[in-house]
Amino acid sequence: MTKLMEWLLGLSLIGILWSIVTFDLLDLRISDQYLQVAWPLPIYLLVTFGCYSLAVVGYRVATFNDCEAAAKELQEQIQDAKRDLQKKGLHF
Amino acid sequence: MASQKMKTPKDSDKYSVLLPTYNERENLPLIVWLLVKYFSESGNKYEIIIIDDGSPDGTQDIAEHLQKIYGSDIIMDTILSASLLLGTAYIHGMQHASGNFIIIMDADLSHHPKFIPQFIRKQKESGYDIVSGTRYSGIGGVYGWDLRRKLISRGANFITQVLLRPGTSDLTGSFRLYKKEVLQKLIEKCVSKGYVFQMEMIVRAKQLGYSVGEVPISFVDRVYGESKLGGNEIVSFLKGLMTLFATT
Image (cartoon, rainbow over all chains, first blue to last red; front, side, top):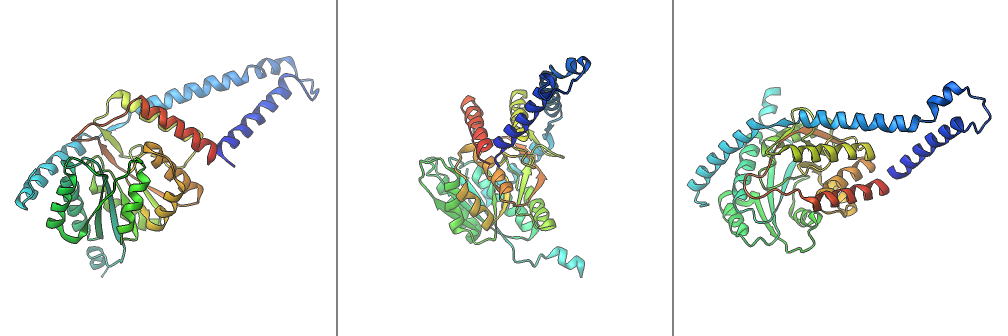
């Protein structure tokens, strides 16, 4: 099963459950209290997921390592390499 | 006895490093020097295969000169492919490869050979089919990226993780070690270009049930030359992501 199919399956399952509760398709006589919560649930979920995504990406951007030491080490090694290669007869 | 084994690895594993180049006359001698340095220190058997895509800047002359200095550990291959398919370069290079492991990396010094011994250790640890360098976990990271670049990179990675759940943290990186037969099989199956090619390789690898280990790496963006990430790259990345989403 492709990822696309997995997503469609998951979303339709949620959609069906939501419709059953919101439109009371199975005549479950769900109390108004629960209905009030149920019908805007997809929007809540969407907003929650959006906030979660922003938080995660923001945190990861903020904590993305800046490899200053690696860059410095590389520069030093480049100088060593150039000296050594010139000794071996390679001219840049 | 144990310590003796540590000093002289007697294993028969050989590592073929594939370096696709285009106009890398500045960087090529430096990356080769570093490769030779770290392989000599680790004592693993190796060879370096330079696959030049018809560079007009004299990269090939430099490569021939390096062959004279370092001898038969360095193999030169020239292709003239207008196809821009990285896979083509790898297929070419692999025809010359005598190692049972293939290491692919960029020749522009953004991937440091000091990580290769760690890749090898990681591979031996659990017999991984693939070991991938990762900029996104542990002590991994980048140098020379501004906020915009970091945001795009992290954002794209997050979307990919959500949609594809690949089980590896760095999908677009191209610093990896493969078992030779695994790489051969994957290249047959992968058709994407650019960034997406690396992503497709790792996603399809997971799909085929290959094991992937990860080693955190520091990615130092191009020292010489320009690094590119424009609107075109982003659009083609998203197209590739959607293709993988619908087909894997």
